Length: 477
Image 1 (tube, one colour):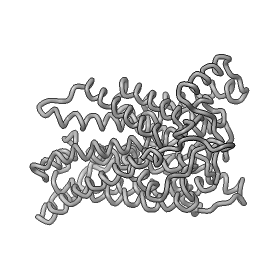
Image 2 (spheres, rainbow, N blue to C red):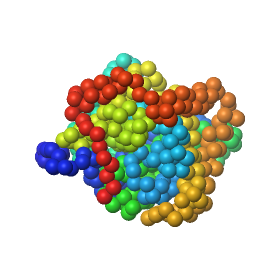
Image 3 (cartoon, rainbow, N blue to C red):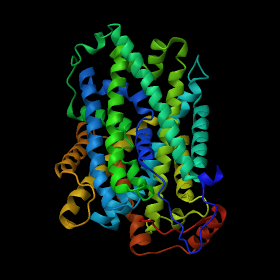
Image 4 (cartoon, rainbow, N blue to C red):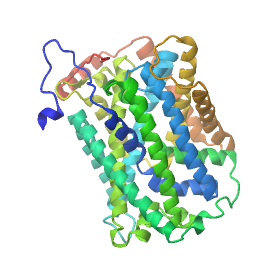
């Protein structure tokens, strides 16, 4: 068992690097397992509130799936052009140079990826604790303690072994697909009994404003987020030119189909008003349909969120690894464990920030900031692909998408960023933009001019000895 999980030591003259251990099945599991988290069990009610009708909300669910697929296909071209780990960071380096790439790594490392993991772990803890507290809301302190425990467990798994991390991902993805199937079968049974009244007159209600549609997209896209996570681990994918696009083409349509059928199942058992009033739609559905087996729903959500958090940390650690290897973050974050070949410092760094967000943040505030900022960079990646079609026309492209795809995703991303600001201006949007640009304060002295505080060498050496990690050479085999 130990031999299958880690390498005992380096061979003579063998440079330490991340190995290609992610195949097609694991790639699909990483995409599906990260995307299907807590969103589909919580977000349907948020979408109904913001759209005002069942029909519009259902269209937005499908549109979010289509947008995610188009974006991921564009990322597949970028990922097969540049097989370095790090996703957007690597693509910005190729298309725009080090400054935009640094700003992405700055925001993603300190905010986006840790907040994503914090949201998922808080959702995990909420459902896990509710299983033992039936007559009142679970204490906030207990929820946060369970979320912190989940972060520690996931960190240990991913630091111990890449194979173990992927095994956990595969197992939990399979388990959550079984849970999804339970919901779909329960809904099909209610429809078979003739409970279709909530699906009729689907478009009755007020027409949502453009800003409301954009914020509804934020809610839906949060449930789909994770479609680009496989690009963060490109250096570890076996035969990435084939397995990266194949994983995307299998994984994202599968998730979209699951989400559409789950929403129909919810409406077969509950009215739109009941869905809006329910704080845990999946649990209410389980109480209505499953009877004595209703406990399967909170269990399914905890399994789903744990697997999603595992995939999120797996990908996030690779961003730290790739950016710090080029001098954009602290050197120690690019080191890997000498025997286990895992980017342990990057994983630990992300987990510490996520833990701080768990202690001081709330799910709602984190989701709004995450969605607004993330789509700025998703649009930037589409622009990078378009730019490189002209600046690098002869660059090898094992997989190539029609140019209309990145153009469409870029236009939609601009809409998703601008529409909420125009419709309901909030100071938080300004804070987000200032935080992104604030990274230049650190970029100029520490990256552009190469200034390094004297004590950093001692800090690096200390953590290198403590964590048993060493510098790497990237692998392009």
